[in-house]
Image 1 (tube, rainbow, N blue to C red):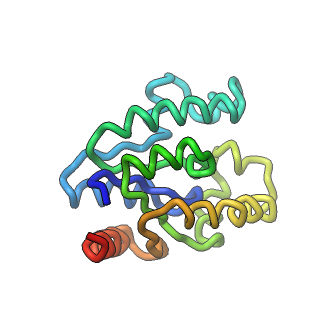
Image 2 (tube, helix red, strand yellow):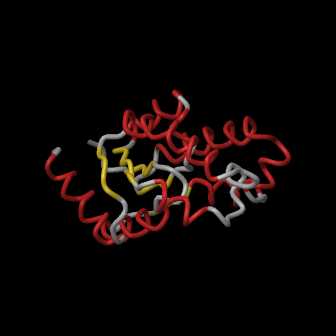
Image 3 (cartoon, rainbow, N blue to C red):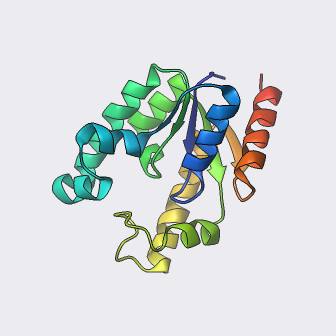
Length: 167
């Protein structure tokens, strides 16, 4: 297992919140990949999707993931990052990948009113289908899988407990 952590999971599962708490606990840097992309590109994620489409965003996402791979810390990944084999390869080589497993209903309540490009103008059934299609991919690419329905503090405790068991 590596000392760098990448958090994966569906939109709204708590990757950013848990990532900040984990980084604080480990006394290391935290990066939110989507925030890094938005800052680096000087555009919001919805603007990037509107101007370059999802394919253009995914190219940027991969480039920023590769930059983060050489740094020590905790990385919060976008919900779709793990769908792509080249990204999973970077994750497996450079990070301990943690799947924050959260039920659909909780995630949906957190994201339904957001400006996320993959949620806007979609029905609950469409978002659920996206969740269900991604779930096995998150499971397959992770080193650790934790129940993310608890408080961020408890989720971090579980990550560290599982990490100790796998050393």
